[in-house]
Amino acid sequence: MRRVAATSVLSGVVASAGLIACGETPCPPGSARDARTGLCTLVDEAASSGEGAGAGGGSADTGGDGPGGGDMDSGGGGCGTGFLSGDPIAVLASAGEPGGPDVDLIEWVEATVVGDDHVVLSGQGGAQLFSLEDGLPVGPQLTVPQTFRSAADGAEVVFGGRTGSLYPVSFADPGSPERLDPIPEPPNFGFYEDIAYANGLLLLGAHETGGVLLDRGGTRVGTLPASDAYGVGLAPGRAVLTDRDELVLFDIRDPRSPLELDRLPMGGEGRDVDFDGERVAVGLGGRGVGVWDIEADLLVPRGTTGLPGAALDVSLDGDEVWVGAWESSALVRVGDDGLTVLGLEAPRFSAMAVGARGGRAVVADWYGMQLLERTRDVGGPELSIPEAVRFQGGGAEVFLDVRNWGPEPLAVELDAAGTGFVVSPMELTVPPGGWERVRIAAPMSLPEVPTPLPWTSNDPDEPSGVVELAPADRGVGTVHADFSLQGLVGTDPALRMFTLAEQRGKVVVLAYFALF
Amino acid sequence: MCSLEVPDLEQSIRAAYPEEDVVLWLVNPQDGAERTAGFLAGAGVELPALLDTGGALYRSYPRAEAQGFAPYPVHVVIGPDGVIRYLAFQYDAVALRAAIDDLLDAGR
Image 1 (spheres, one colour):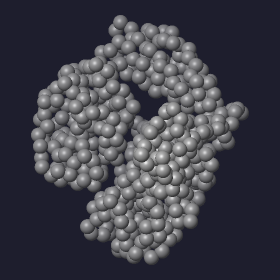
Image 2 (cartoon, helix red, strand yellow; image 1 turned 135 degrees about the vertical axis):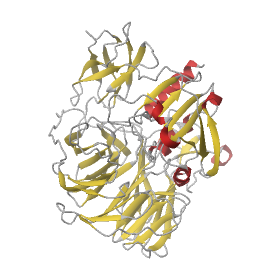
Image 3 (cartoon, one colour; image 1 turned 90 degrees about the vertical axis):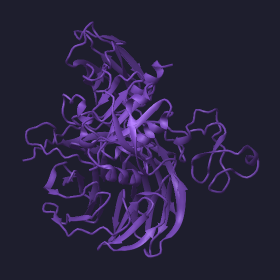
Image 4 (cartoon, chains in turn green, yellow; image 1 turned 180 degrees about the vertical axis):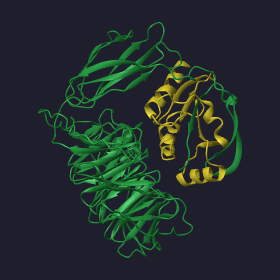
């Protein structure tokens, strides 16, 4: 019943400049790079004349005391603020068109590599194996009660959903997956956020309970102490977890008495971990992604970098890391000079998660999936332009921001002829890493339906396209009806009353959410 | 909006603006007090969460004409004058911040 469109649209490859060298971002005035963590830390003036000010011991490296310009949060042992290369990502296949008559509208949120050839996507009660070879689904779509997180141990994948039982599925025969008996949740440990699975051991990142180690039968065999555990990773004899903004390495050769080996600040709170025993990648949410290596049972920072969106899912692939960051799927290289963003690919919906192996990645793209391939390093302009801009609140003008993530200048032409809109400028050149703003003024009466504004560019991947100039939603520009609702604040169980009218004079943001 | 996005919202919006200028309220049109409290505690979220029991407030907005994301807006930005300035049917932190920035700039 499910319609899957798989297309092969290898994008053109340009021979051009290679990667731009990347220098270390200077620390802001009054701070210095800590030699151990790679993060910029505030320097105590009195103490700095003596021994180093780094929190992790050892002398602080003050090499980066340039005249500002650095970003406190972007440290991490190397550069990592730039988007330095062209576009080495090709979209090999995509699946799951929305709105079709016979489409399963699954909201895919999680991706896990199974073996070397497959990735299983899961979300909203369903799981489906996809091939890394051609992006096509393999075997039937399974109904699984909990699919928020998954982890694989060989061909067996365990699915879970923050609370309740865990649901193992064997993909030993990929065409005929076999649901195994659920693993009951051990009592009294609350929500968990992440699952790791290796050598018959399970590890759950369970906030204040810490890292909960379970055997395959669900019996709790050990606990990794943490004040707020979130992301977890397992390898033979070793485990890592994120404890709020710290990364912690454990020796778990005896899971009943885990031994903390090392602990380092990450410069952001961990949201997801991938760990292969020698290297740890951590999704740091709005702070991007960071990578640490394990050397002599110590964590050694390899760098962090920001990304468009929020990095909530990471997948190690050799010397590279793929990141699902909602607004982008990112390919990041781990080099001697820190992390470098090699390329970004826009999802069609939202890049919730990614599973990568052998230079290919399957993206859990909310209502769809993408199979991405890492091509060779190429330089060139890399266009980022919105698909639509919306006139808000009856306003007569709107701004369109055009960005260039590539190392070569980007040229864009907008064709406003016949649209009735006044577009200025119509031709623009955006420098590498920069952006330009286009002003769009509406005609006397704003059309009720979106008007397409065609563009062309010198980005080889995106030579042409359309921005929709959309009218404001109904509702915008009208006074919000007053309301009074009961509500909670944080962990305080007391219900309070919230009234919109009492907030007059402030900007009020309402964010609707529901629990799955 | 799925619950995954709440901790990010706390970081990208709450931490970015002073509380005397910008009020950020979560609204849950589906789950009761106990489930919502459990989520806030579990996720370590300190934001106010309003209980729109039955979803009446949620359904008071116009539906999206183009389906594909939530049928009703997940983010609503209301200006200091009480006028709705932004409705979004999917999570777009950049657009959300831009809407807030526009209102704050206009007030200066």
